[in-house]
Length: 338
Length: 292
Image 1 (cartoon, rainbow over the protein chains, first blue to last red):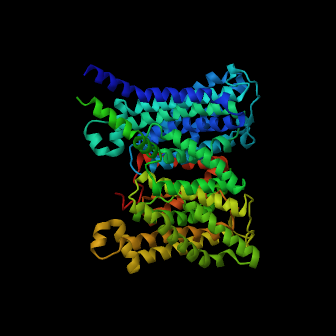
Image 2 (tube, chains in turn cyan, blue; image 1 turned 90 degrees about the vertical axis):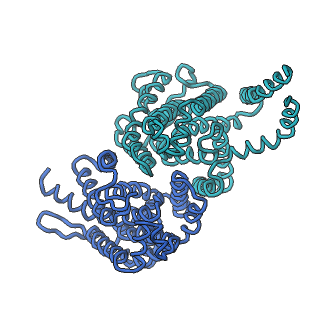
Image 3 (cartoon, rainbow over the protein chains, first blue to last red; image 1 turned 45 degrees about the vertical axis):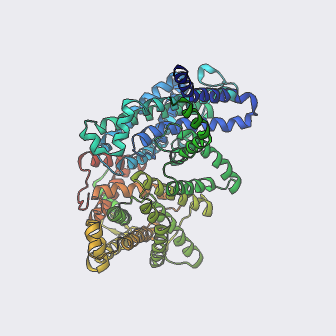
């Protein structure tokens, strides 16, 4: 009996072990592959972080956002402007930007979470458009559509790294952190509130869960993380302009990765981001880089994903994993059974 | 700033608002009848501007002559898309976020298709009357705006007549009010949905020739039209045709006056502020009838 319980404990540890190996593998990747390949992995981590943040409001909270680029732009522009004009390190600017994203999110969350229907998604779209136009309008400060070019220093104190490897680890850490936050959130008390609100708002409300409050919390966390990612992106790309950081294209890429990966799942954003970056590569090859080609593909992908598999692909991996491990776990259970 | 300048801005805004109203009617119908917020609505306006332009460029077709061409054309496109995408959304019983995303996907596909096909260059349609104007005292009325306004009134009246006078129009309204009761009365809701979506897309296309007489044509023009139309629809009340038209006039006026008083770029911010205020104080709109 004792031995059996030990075996059971060992089985429970397997996922953690696998996760450990997975993370070790990710850490060693830059030493195994050329830099051009690493660039794509960084993009995957970048979109994983954004999608996992998006997933908190759209997946867990059930409130679809098509304007996450607004929070991204707030983060990117705040840290960049503070650095350019006051020489403030983007490490600090990043935090200020993240806190500025909170009132921005509140502005659309407060009026729309009292209502049901398409209001929230419209408000997010409109907010992104308003922020983009404001960024162009205040051209004295933001240089308008010309954009801001950041000097490349390679100084880690300024959130820059001499080689892509530094960014690799930064984005790896960020992506894992956001996934971890998502996992914590999903399986916390609040996570079950989110689920209850998403599935049956009236019943949740009757049981004393305040939908407005929890949707707002999900949105604020989501906006906060998205703004941080925006600041880091600005220091990585060394160039920002309103069309690059506050475009519908960016919002759509995030939403596409989210829905393809699996809304409301913990690892879905990672699967979605991987598919997004891969399809970007495939799309560029297929269309030969014609204007609009890749996004046409994205639009079709989005429609097909919803019509064929609205629950996302992450479930496929889980099913495959179960089928692969079934003979093994079957044997162990018979062994454990006293 | 003199008073006649403000009156001028109000007049311009009202004339422009007619077109906004027409676009919003095409959006409010599918929204009210089948609960489909058509995120690709502005994209259809944009797409219909291109055939108008090419007919004008190739054969010297006056944009107004394109109206009876693009409306049936886009009605059929709408019906095709209904069978291709929307009907399937109903069949798989997609949740509201999923429906929104599918239509957003359609919107992205369409404007990138336009970019792919016709490039990002701005096309300008110079109608023969494009520069002419009528002056009444100090107020100048631009002819293309006036023709657009008249066109929007005519098309809106036709829609109202269709909805209230024909059997099919009444069946459409009945489906919007109570789908189950309509089914019991022998109305096929699928057929109504098809007609409704086709009509919405057709109306969007109907606005395009008028719009192209004073608006530069480029692939991303649809996005802001979609957003403006949504604000108008929410303001007028979901599914309300009158509300949509009147809302269009109001938003057109606001845009025009703010552009004069501040700057055109901030007009958008003012529309967003109106949107937030409506959501806060009048979320069901001013003339909403069918709100569930």
